[in-house]
Length: 184
Ligand code: HEM
Image (cartoon, rainbow, N blue to C red; front, side, top):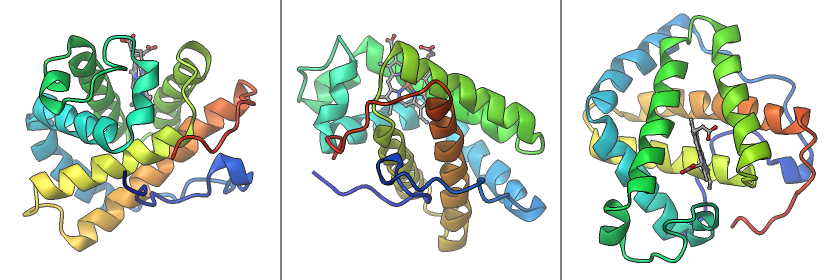
């Protein structure tokens, strides 16, 4: 099991929520949009790789998925319809965020919806979002080393910090109280 990459912001368990997500500059937005194009062209493959890495390294995250909670074999996971479906959903939501970087309200409403659904419907421990954001960055950087230079990775870390900030904001709004440190 690996320790999660830090995508910025303190965990909710520590109760130290930054007042706002660090805003992106115009140049940073452009960097994200230019690099995302390459990732999104391979949306499904990259999304599936991200989720397999996530579930292999953090097996407790499988508990929320009825169809593969008992699966350990990455090849079997790759064939799971539910995993592939969630990979598309995750990548689709990130695409919406990237498309709306210039519109903070839209970006925040997209992520608030994601946060609310995961808190209320799926009851996912929010710490897993931080972990998954870190895994996304790791896989994007490994799969597209020519685009994800150190500078680009830093900008993406900032975006992932914003994603986590908005998602956890929605958890707070719906009164999430199930705080535990069992995620890692
Ligand atoms: C940036 C991270 C994530 C994004 C953008 C995302 C996006 C989505 C979307 C758009 C849906 C469908 C909407 C809905 O059900 O209302 C969904 C469903 C779901 N998500 Fe996520 N998700 C993320 C992270 C996670 C994590 C970390 C977990 C658990 C460890 C998780 C577990 C689930 C489950 C269990 C479902 C329902 C799946 C099903 O019905 O087959 N998600 N996700």
